[in-house]
Image 1 (spheres, rainbow, N blue to C red):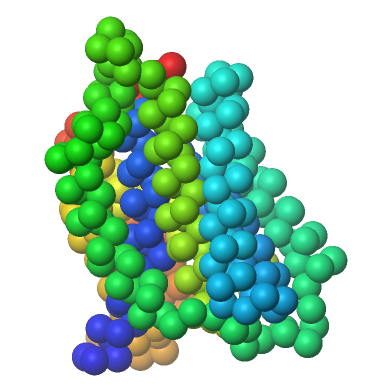
Image 2: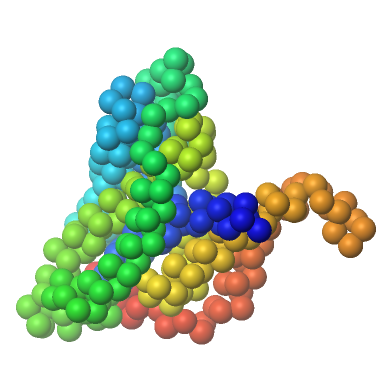
Length: 279
């Protein structure tokens, strides 16, 4: 049980951080399916920086990489008015191919594994603190209320003198920082960068945000639930269930099956921010 608890925390941490990054985008009205690509780019650049500059370089490099990706999403959706979903898909595609190329060309074989990194507890504590900090910020500060106003109705926000483009810029800036932390945590946990190491975590984080009704604390709970099923998969893999030996592929698909079932059960019940995807 203790091992299951530890694994749940470890698997939940990047999901929570990425989901909170999605919150600061989507509550401002920007659809963001590019969380996956931001995390992956952060993991790649963080691993490259770690081999040369140590743990601090890893953290700074990962956050900067994800922030650049996030601000590109802001530029494409808010300045050039490209469809939000297409922009997010483009970011994911660039990250999938770009990280493979970058690490093959710039990676140091001498640091193929065991990269220096910050303590995992740093990321775990961040994953606990950030959702509550965002909840306080969004409900009790001027900047947070403006974010909610823009995400609810950008036209009315303009009438009140709020600039949605500016608010969304700072929202996506926060998205870059948080997805950067999530990507760096993956490298810190494994000690190595591998191709496509995010393995759909960005999409699961977005699903958790939706299941949480675009609210920080319920999204945190949803991320912990997904982390629990990921940990349960490792604990039960290879163990006969009701006398039958289930294939390893079924256990590997368990977190994703739970995501689909949960979304199918709650689709239409959560109230989507009214300004989501609107200019």
